[in-house]
Image (cartoon, rainbow, N blue to C red; front, side, top):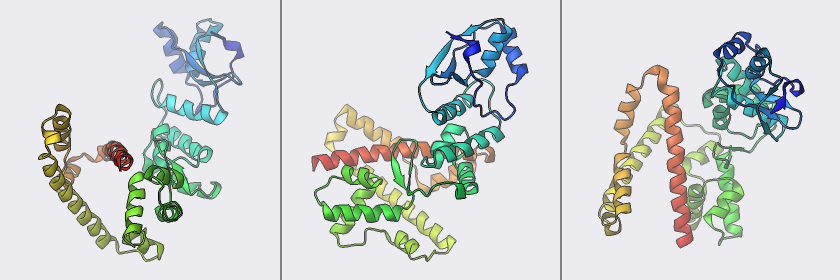
Length: 311
């Protein structure tokens, strides 16, 4: 329990400040007020100003609170996260302004990480970042929602990985990936390319480095063609897995095969499903799909790590 008189007003993402009507609604409800969140260092409210106002209107001099230990910047981000999840929701404009401030506070965060904290799309965050770009420090990598550091310039990450592999050929994929900020899958691809005497960069990235950008339509067709080939290869490999006795004749193996089979999606099915998504849902469905893709990617990287450790 903390004294209401000891509290400082919140560094709130709300552009209009407190909504007295909402505070009065809390008073009239007669319900118990959930604990507020306060920064221990200066007793500034992080989340719960309407509850503080409601408690004062009820004549209380103390209120229940959780105490947070951290910087003012972290407290603001926590305030934004709290206010997009419960209580009186932030408006779109308030979320965009909060996201712009978070970009300045944490320029090392990825667009998706900022989007998750502020409740807007990653695409909008990217546009906001460009708007304030001249005020931001030059970053070579960003931290994703999963806490992993990834390079902004993938070509640079591959070059650094190739240098590390040549200097330390016995380094594990995980060591390489963590050292230069790339995925273990990318580290594996770089190492295989070096073993074959090839450039560590795929042809598409080498073209980008030379400053020669392919025409949009052929590039798009190339990507789709590569996707179709990858899906075809995945289907073929899944059929081979289904013949593996170590999977077919164990409960865990059969579960894995069923799981992979159910979640298989061809390129034509992708196109058909995408066309069926209502226009007002496209951004949300895209974010959900990217979230699932990140999980699948993590699953693949963990398998890569196991294979590397076994080898």
